[in-house]
Amino acid sequence: MSLILLGLLLCSFSSNKNYISSNYFDDYFNPVNIPCNTDVPVPITELNYSDLEVTSSTSGLCLIGCGINNEDNLIDGDDSNYTSVNTVVGLGVTHTLKVTDNTTDEFYSAGSFAGFFIENASVVQVDLFDGIVIRTYLNGVEQESNTSSALVSINSDLLANDQYYVGFDTTLDFDAIEISISSFLGVASSTRVFHAVVNSFCEGPALECNTPTRLAKPDFPAKIVQERTGFGGALSVGNVNEADAAVDSNANSYASINFALGVLASGSLSIKDELSDYPAMTYAGFDIENSSVLNLNLLDGITISTYLDGAFQESKTGSSELLSVDSALLLSGSERSQVGFVSNLPFDEVQLTINQTVSLDLGSTKVYGLILESFCEGELECSTSTVLNNPSQPVIINNGNTGVDGVACVGCEVDEASNVISESNSDFAQINIIAGVANTA
Image (cartoon, rainbow, N blue to C red):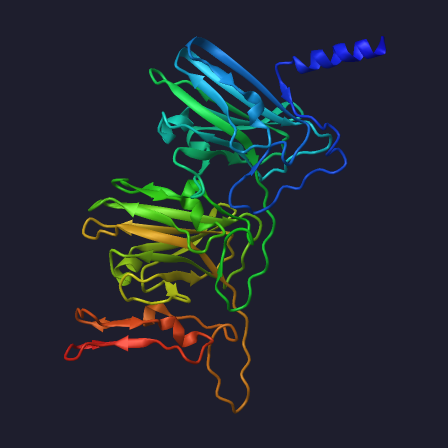
């Protein structure tokens, strides 16, 4: 009799509309730590977690081709599997999927990114996000929600076209993430939902003295600040592509700020250390490259601003205020360089803004990342000649006093200025002046 009752109970459980993963007690005493500072969010699937549950529902009037298929794919261990959310013809249709981690005493900490990995080739991103709501829950109680422009989209260069990590940075703890996708009037839509995702941040190391350091993953909890990234101006024509490439683990990947031809506009990209503040007298700048204009002209259109806990701190603009640190080449055409300034106030976020005028076409500027440098006092030996260089001395190139003065001079330039302060005794800077031209370098 006991065996019969147990069998009936198991049959009842397996026919439930919800999908619940097995191995209920596997993680009860050993909660899984989320890898921190990863390039992309971590999937919440059976591969790393147990006691996961998927619930789904559809509201509105479904007429043709409406439904949610293969809900169990949302939490299985195969990252290529997906749940299909479809609406061909319907009125006010909303499909909802929720992934809950039921492990006792386990939750995801506030400050983590909560969202889903999705794909949709039938609707442009901005319209797709207008129909999406992401919510978080804790013990069945809704905690937070975001939709439309408030959602964060992580478009990693690791992803295919039309694939996104969509969600938001939480301010409250949670143990469940939900996505609702609404239909679009007159547009047949099919969205693939691969899995729920989460991330966590851990504090990075202290900056090494007198050494330029890229604020990037996995060493630092670096993230793009969406509300201060994008385009503005009288005519907001342009885009910021692959913003997250400026904080990923590949030092050669880059975001790009792209301007339309002859348009008055400004493009910005802002990077934040999610856990640490940096004191006054810290260098803050960006590693950039532009093949369209001379660096001097580009610098005059650049503003770099610092923030602390979202509040503006200070900014510097133009070649007379911005410094160059550890540049390969300075003021010499299309070469890659690092521009910024030494802060007077503490900060945890730095924004790069590039302004294009009607008379200056900037084209595309590559942004490789945010560069920080702390300075420590060096030592001089008595009666001994000492070369001032990094990292033994707190020296930088003063961009305001470096370059070419005088009438226009094609080919006049200062090359590889940062070699003057490098540790090597074999490299050098080079001052180039064309004969017969009245200039000073």
